[in-house]
View 1: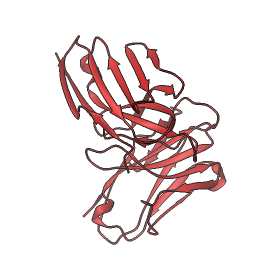
View 2: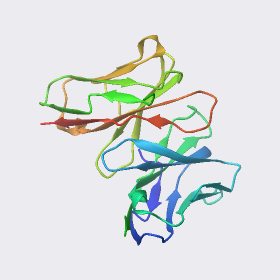
View 3: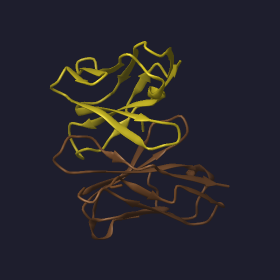
View 4: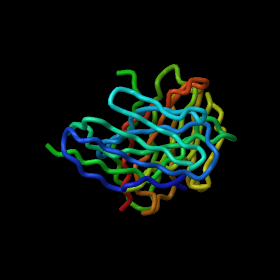
Length: 113
Length: 114
């Protein structure tokens, strides 16, 4: 079963604009990760944020985590056409199997020229 | 290339047939995961190995599904008596225990059951 939902389900922006995707989850987590998936391909790990962290940066990516609201956001700045993909958040639970990922429903991002 | 590889990339089979997929993880990774992804959804966890031990199985993994990881290297996922509802992308991922850097995914095997 899916852990939670992502919002929006689909997002269309122009190249150079920023894209923000939100993720909500349901249970206590050890960490939250964001992945990108190009159409029909495997997933690529983007960034991991631990439950005791509030914000993390990696290149043009900025991730925030609010454990009190059980939510996270992914910001992609200065978007490029190559950023067109589906983006998924995935959580690792605080108890039980280490590293087992539970994915959200994903946001489909379209970046146009 | 030393990434995760999966074989075959595509499989079309008739309902009732058995199919087997193979995953070769990154060589030093001791953890291996199988996920299933249907169109428009995020991947769903199926099962997980640490070395050769299968440590967890999802309730999604009915008794028609079996996974093995002999010698803690490659893994196989077999589906017996396939049903149309088994049509999905089957993804394999690997990681190294103790390193919180996410999982490395293979390209997936797309199964179509007709």
